[in-house]
Image (cartoon, rainbow, N blue to C red):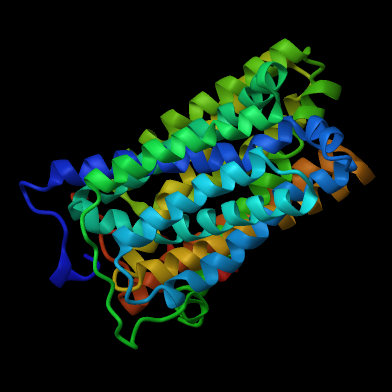
Amino acid sequence: MLYPDNSTFDREGTRSGWGAVFALTLCVSTLIASEFMPVSILTPIASDLHLTEGAAGQAISVSGLFAVLTSLSVATITRGIDRRTLLLGLTLLMLLSGLLVAFAPNFVVLMAGRAMLGVVIGGFWSMSAATVMRLVSENQVPRALAMLNGGNALATTIAAPLGSFLGQYIGWRGAFFLVVPLAAITFVWQWVTLPSMLSERADRRVSALGILRRPNASLGMAAVALLFAGQFALFTYLRPFLESVTRLEVSMLSLVLLIMGAAGLVGTWLVGRLMARSLAMTLILAPSALAALACALVAFGTLALPTAGLLTLWGTIGTGAPVAWWTWVARRFPEDAEAGGGLMVAVVQLAITLGAAGGGILFDATGYRATFLASAAVLGAGALFAGLDACAGQSDGARTPIADSPRPDDAIPCERLQRSA
């Protein structure tokens, strides 16, 4: 466990630890909903503030930029600060962000509010694995991380349609203002349930970039980057694909996307079960399965029912995969989980940006087939790097077996993977 001399759970405290996990899950859901809400109300934002839609779209990119910067520095900058105090402070910052955006009189204030949200996203996700490790016992960590990612999946599913729906009746400012009472509820819940989590000031604590210099980190982080880049090269352009290739009407398209998002909730549970057998194999199989699904969408994309089935599987696997990688951070860097989490957030945010941008260039230039096949290739490379990371973990003794696992993660055909690389 992280900071074993300051463990915050025991047999009597496990239940209160789970109360804190539930509070953090609500925080995740609110954060993700706030991050993606501008997608569906970009036009009224631009009209009200007298901006172009391209300028208003920077409200999304600026939060991603500040999330990356925060994730790389938060573990170092906040060294010595009680993690309870830090999480409560980030929640208050989320509340202030909601107020600034909802009442923004101009572009500058809007960007300031979104930048604050980016700080919260980067700070919170960087500490999520380390915090969970201190709230629940070791064998419950994968389950708690799955719950956090379930909140992520739920918010991602409903953010855009909810923003569009609310924008019609209470305006885009009213939609953003809803973050304020949710943040207030989250703050109170965390205040009641979060225990004190002292942070050591020891100089041995490494930075996020310091983690990357470790030989047992680079392969895994490369695998994470390829997974998310491959995913978002395809996922970002599902709507135009479903409209122009599968030829779904808007109502049916919305239903397919909703089912896809709901399947992600199942995926977080399913991945938790698979990790109980082998974390390494879960990390390899997830991108492999997504690559196969991307190829299948090229083959059957004109058929509505098979496409809906394939996207349901995509939602199940794609949403569940991050649970496995956050568990990897907790197991691979048990003494530096905050720095490892910060690096993970930065890698994921950059990978999403590059994957979506590269996919868009391909989609415009050559169409969906090249985009989806490129996504499959990147995902396949991610599976290969995940396998190489598993082998490296075995050789240097860095990998810790998953708690309650019937056997350690040692059943990886490493020689074959190394030859293929």
